[in-house]
Length: 197
Image (cartoon, rainbow, N blue to C red; front, side):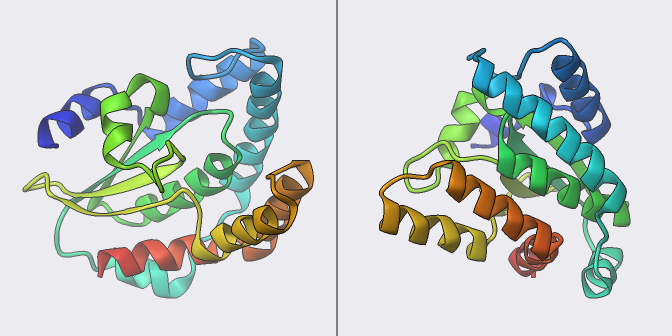
């Protein structure tokens, strides 16, 4: 596992590099990943505007800020993502704001389709669901925990919808985006902190 993580880190981006790359692709009518479809390109464009808005408006709550400011060791937060992923567009700005609070957190981002071995270590119910945050002790390279692809309440919302309707359709996606809007990143912040305690 350590070898796979180290290899992935050599291909990783800072948050700003990731954002610049996604903006460039969006402007060029492209997307990240090995598949280039009109739908994925459209999701990338939509997510670019979401990322832009959330980068400006996302706030780390006081109790989370206090915890992060008092970390006693260094961590790498390695996130597996793609530009077309709606959950990633909602969660990455939160993770970035949290990482900015502490000089003990080094945030790195990798693309799922370019890191198969890493993704296969962190499947969700057998699927390649993203985003996935891997919390790593920087000194030992030990994986402390992982989070993703979405907070528990959002997972339940999609699970319930799929149980009732048999699919995750556009209505489900809209309901999920409304949930993220109302939650303001608080569930993600609290769940990540809980994983670190």
